[in-house]
Length: 464
Ligand code: BGP
Image (cartoon, rainbow, N blue to C red; front, side, top):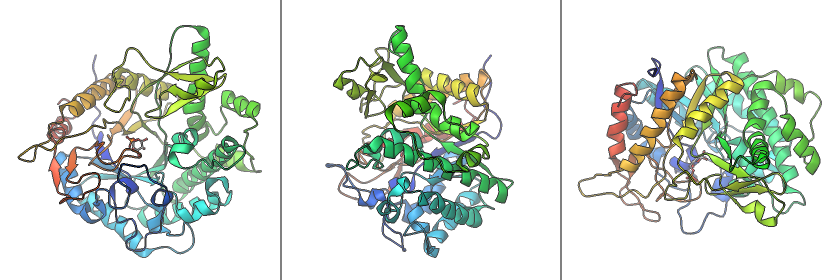
């Protein structure tokens, strides 16, 4: 029978600093890799975005009006350390005190992502995550966050979508195309991130016994395109490479064996320093947070060059010669941006993660990017978004009925913000921000139809 959502379920919404805050060079903030990247043509940059930095009080009040029990946001490392390490910028520290206080005054739980794609540019110039020194830099940063906000924050997320940063380094800016073997470099970066994460988890537990901390990868169900054994093997390869590598390390402190042998075969194994494996084994998350937008179908790779351009992973392509190739799923419809919509896959994903790790889960992103239309009288009729979220909620409730422990749901995004690559016209929010791609207009906040729908969902604890 259908179980209800648990009491004190963390209904909320998500954002990330560089996509929502704007004020990219104000109050001492240093540049991040995102600020310095050549941004995609035809869409806005990340300088102003939704100007949440100046509107945060109004925005938090709107989240409270929706009934949010939690708000997930990220801290911009470059507001705290403009140069990545060294001198702390007090104004940046103050901003997040103000934001967290505002959230708490509205009886919401702050859920804090420590790092969401926006690495300090100064650190990138010193080699970024490929440089071992990054482990210390992250430790120093984590220490300041725990010291400053530790008594106010219960839920911490270490690194947003580390798996996407490694798998799609070209899209997220972690890949250095000038290198002879950029993939080897990426798996070295990955190792450093994993060690940095483990150190942060341990520090959090040592310093803040009341706090909880976990990783936040993008995890989705991986389907074989057919029942052909080679396709099933390809799906098994990809699920290890895309999903389990990251979580096996975070939870069990070990390299997934399938991935390790694949790294060995390619000459991509990272340098592991003495003591690293102890650090990795010595830290355990309290929960797993994950982002889910779409499932992924794969088939066997027969070794063609074209196999590298398989369909999938949001708007990116996937495939590796002889390992797997992304494929279309004939049973799924896509959104306006070609992402397959798969609510049942959401239930499967929840079950798979819980079966493997047995830790409580929180969904830190899911949502529908769409071209919303502002109608007269300040209306946005986003019934497609309501439909998407409703179907995912139904499946989440079924997963809970299957016995999966889920303690929160924070869809992307609490308010409109700038997409990673597709500008602000690709909107995700419950709240419309009145600006165009290149024109700021009056930036006023407008409640979409989904705002009122979600308000009812929260009020009835998921019964809408
Ligand atoms: C996730 C990221 C978010 C967000 C979202 C939507 O991968 O964590 O930062 O942007 O995807 O993706 P997009 O903006 O590409 O539509």
